[in-house]
Length: 338
Image (cartoon, rainbow, N blue to C red; front, side, top):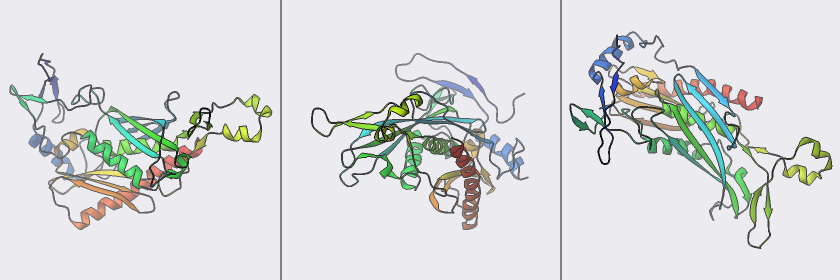
């Protein structure tokens, strides 16, 4: 027997020129909202989880042993995000000759959610034989990948997590360009928190390789990665060669790690922390608060037309600070272990 949040999917792929259509049979938002309200009025959820309690969070660093310089697998409930970091050598800007750069991309696919195609684009819905462009009236009816990428990248760049000077190779000539790729393996809600946590944990796992500058042929030189030497060869090395073979980790100071908490607002003005996919569809507003454990607010965003009182907003910030202390302790313990 199907619960009000369950749905049946009947895939009917039609050979059209430019689109693929999927027909769904789902309860409407009114039914889902009424079902959820019967629980939220009692300060609980259909799963029994309290309103202000997050799902179990797991972070596995160094999950990709090849082709990356840092990686992690983050699980928040059933939401899973795999993050890998690759490095490119770029040219710093004239105003910041000692700064490197950070770029981020997020990939969604049918593997993560049936709402997306292989290109990461949202699939249209067929409703009673007609294609519907509007999936839902909720502000979280679907994830805008470009907006999510912009949010996470802006947080990483504006926070004090990274010292861009540590990415410098040659002043004014070359610097590291850190490319962070987040692949959503399973989308069960709250991708903001999962993607940011994946990016942060991968940066904590990042190891910058040693390089040397090849000046042959003139010009500014070619940056080459120095392959790590084996331990039994160290006795034959000079101190200069040993320094060149050392791998560098970024300096992360306690209290500078940005941690986010995303909350949903509902008609009865209940605040639900760490929403699942079904809860996101029927919410009336979403608030994402990014803070550090020192209480500094890095970012605060809200979407949806439901008004919030100053007391509700202060409660959201208070919940976010508590979440930041919990997650930062987990991140720092993983960093020390590595």
